[in-house]
Every structure is written in structure tokens, then in C-alpha cells.
Amino acid sequence: MARPPSTPAELDAFQVELEVFQGPFDLLLQLIARRQLDITEIALAQVTDEFIAHMRRVPDLSTTTEFLVVAATLLEMKAAQLLPQTERDPGVDEDLSARDLLFSRLLQYRAFKGVAETIRERLSQQRLAVPRSVPLEPQFAQLLPELVWQTTPEQLAALALGVLAEKPRPDQAQHVNRPGASLEEELAIVEKRLRRGREATFADLVQDAANVAVVVTRFLAVLELYRRGDVQFTQPQELGPLTIRWEAPS
Image (tube, rainbow, N blue to C red):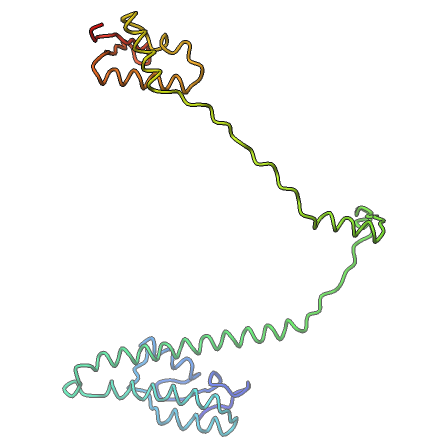
């Protein structure tokens, strides 16, 4: 027979006494789920009778509904296990896996329910604790700076107006671009100097360059002359002086 619990009517408090097991019903479910107890050895009819007697002592609709779900799952699992191998359908193994999944989810639900009950109890205990309001100790209160600020409503309004007023936009910086050098003009200068001297270093060709743009343009002019076949390069050392020699007929 089932023993009356000392706690409110819950399925966790339900105790069963069978030939193969004596103890909480929740532990019985865990043993079946872990396959440590064969479902075929459980007398489900006796478990049901003991639960009915248990509910007569402490009736509870929620607990009854939960037990019906668990009992239906156990009954289906037991029927599948007792079914002869020769009469099983090809999909029986899949059905057993589905039942195992359903049963495991049921156990997970019960685990979460237990955690929720623990949280509820701790929250109830927390409501009994009242924090004590402690003022700042005098030795620390003296360390606080004394904030004194005197102003009139008009001054406060002027400060607020200054904060909310539209700020002047900063002047946009204007970039002045230097005039670029003409490739045609610089090409004529480089060609004239090489025709006259027959040979010159690149440093000599850009010695009078006014800016970087002129230096770059004259280098492009040298490359253009090389493309035409009018000049040749020589540079004995890496990063050394670059010598340009005029090769075209004068």
C-alpha cells in the first residue's frame, strides 16, 4: 500500500511498494529510464491502485493529470516490450525510440519542475530578509566636498539657452592644389638637355625642379624617351645614381 506523504500532494511524494521495487515513484521512473529496471517486471495495475488510494487521501487534479500521462507512457512501453518478436511490425523499433524520447522528455519536465519549486522556495525565503539601512559613517561623510552653487532663475535660464543654442558651424578647410606639370613641356626640356650633353644623371635632370610634381613628370618623360628607343639606362649599384644616355641620332 502507498504511504501517506508528509508534504503537499505531489507526484514526487507518491511512494510505491512492489515486489521488485519499494520507494518513491520518481525513483522508479529514473530506474526504468536508465534501463536498470525492466518495465515488464512492473505491475502497473498495482501502481495505479496505490496511486488511487494516495489521491483519496490528498486529492490534487494537477498530480492526477501528471500521473495519467506517465502511466500511459509506461503502459505503451510495456506493451511494446511484451509483444512477440514474430508479430512485430518493421516500424516497432522506431516506435520504441519515439517512446524513449517521449519518456526522456517527461523526465526532463519533472526535473525542471523540481528546479522551479526550489527557486520558488528560495524566493519565499528571500522575502523574509530585510536589508538594514546604514547611514554613512561620520568620518567618511567629512571627506565629501561641499557643493555650494548660488544662482538666480535668470542666470540658470541663460545657461540653458547657451547649451541649447545652435553652435556655429566650423569653417571648412579648403585645399589648394598645386598646378600640375605638363608632360609635353618637361619632355622637351629633358630631351634638349640630353641631346646637348649626351649623358646625364636623373639627379642632374631634376636639379632645378620646382616641386615634386615636376620631378615625377620628368621621370615619366625619361620613360617615354626610353619607350621610343632614344635613351638607355645604366645603374651600376642598387639605389645608386641613375644615368641616362642619349642614343638617338642628333
